[in-house]
Amino acid sequence: MTTTLEPAPGRATSRPGKRRQNSGDARRPGWATYVTLMIVAAVGAFPFYWTIVVGSWTNDVIYSDQLTLTVGPNLIDSVHRVLTADINLVAATLNSLFVSTTTALAVVLFSTLAGFSFAKLRFRGSNALLVAVIATMAVPAQIGVVPLYLVMNHLNLRGTLLAVILPGLVTAFGVFWMTQFLRGALPDELIDAARIDGASLIKTFWHVALPAARPAAAMLFLFTFVGSWTNFFWPYIILDSKSATLPVALQGLQSQYYTDYPLILTGALLSTVPLFVLFVFAGRQLVAGIMAGAVKG
Amino acid sequence: MPTRERRHPHRASKRRVTASGFDLRVSPYLYIAPFFILFFLFGLAPMFYTGWVALHEWHPIGGQGDFVGLANFTAVLGQGMFWKSVFNTLSIFVFTAAPQLIAAIFIAAVLDANLRAGTFWRMAVLLPYVAAPVAVAIIFSNLFGNQFGLVNNLLATVGLPQVQWTGSSIASHIAISTMVSFRWTGYNALILLAGMQAIPRDLYESASIDGANRVRRFFSVTIPMLRPTLIFVIITTTIGNLQIFDEARMFGGAGGNGPVGGADGQWKTITLYLWEVGWRQANLGRSAAIAWLLLLLIVLIGLINFLAVRRIASSENGGKR
Image (cartoon, rainbow over all chains, first blue to last red):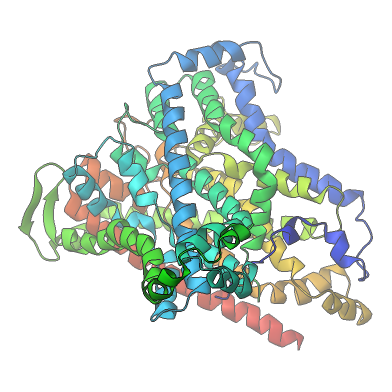
């Protein structure tokens, strides 16, 4: 597989029109295209709207044939019930925030460090080690859960957030991503200049490589954050109700109140709100990141 | 931005000359060390240790028991439920992969135009990605409710029979596949869109001159040129879809201590079975054996996929020339 990461991520967000001005395709598409896209967007947004609908009615209405597609009067009440339910959603949100932030920061730091080394420094075995990194990207993480559980148990970390954070501190994808980016975005002359000025390698990393890596680092942070926020399998195994992250708490909410749809759907909605906020501010970056990481011939 | 060091170019430069050789030789390894150490400890070592655990009796609390050789593997392979979980996993995979890929290619093709507010539409398509699978599963479990679910209400409105979504195997697979596709279709569409935009525009122009209409251009230019991106999307989708856990665990809502993956295991995936055997039945040795079998299946399907896609795409390409 040959993957190229665009050195200039601005490319993916730049308007397609700019690139196509010279081709015959520069004219705007017709209304049918926009109608199609509106339908696609509506299909993507509807389940979230539906969550508000269900959350805003009482159970009596839900379990009857009179439910409509309109929003009812009880959403505030449902939110209140979720927040006072047996599941501590506020604590779970803080746990998720802590785990996701720590994990994303660590992945960015370690990946940029390793990426700098692979992309710009010469050392024996560099190629073989990079191939090893790429090979490990395809390894499904779930394969190692049994021993991971044994290790965490042995270290007395079961039921602690550290047990979720530790296996997430590095990703092969992150190293590969930063290596690809720094290869294109960091000119050798900049490093040479810093070194001629007497900067040690670590200072060169800190003052030259890290600033240059910022756009790719931001994307890597976002993807790792979303991945960590939505992660369920391993946290579900190793955490308990006291240390639950949001998805684990949601599972608890569902299994305890599973006939109370307004309650559990409101819980699902509340757990997603922080990421909606993130999406509003950083969705553009996510789009650019996905498109920059795509494979091209 | 990199000039902070330049202010003191001569500071301790003599000492650096001797230090720099050491710095240059050792630092590259130091910088990649955190990745390799942590990955070894929490990624690679556990994976291989899984093989060791699989050869033993192993209890979550009691710990390591007797060496049993391949008994865990033969026991797993002798369980009807294991084969059922393999069937469920493959069935969900098929229901997910094909429609999702077609939808993603379609959406990408629509997005691959000189759109007004292009970034807005791309973001709109990506929205479902930010919801956790657990949240998505809760929402869709409601939509696919047997009695008062919206999907069944709609079916009734147009005069179709209602479906017992948690009742039958195939119906539950369709429900779970919908959840998975909901979250990933837009994401994959953006990857494919990037692939489409990398196709040289003059290929389309010469196809137009040759008299190819829009549909023809799509099948004889876009699809063949998209081959590497398609392979990438198919491989990653395959690896992900063979490990479905979250949606299957949440579907039906009977979490807690209820049955896992349906009263009859109708939607028990391999990963769900792995979890049940390891943590419900407290048999980690057997659970580890399932993990290795799952890995084997993923490699196998991935390989088949890869070969199939390569052949299809290259024959189309060859046909065009």
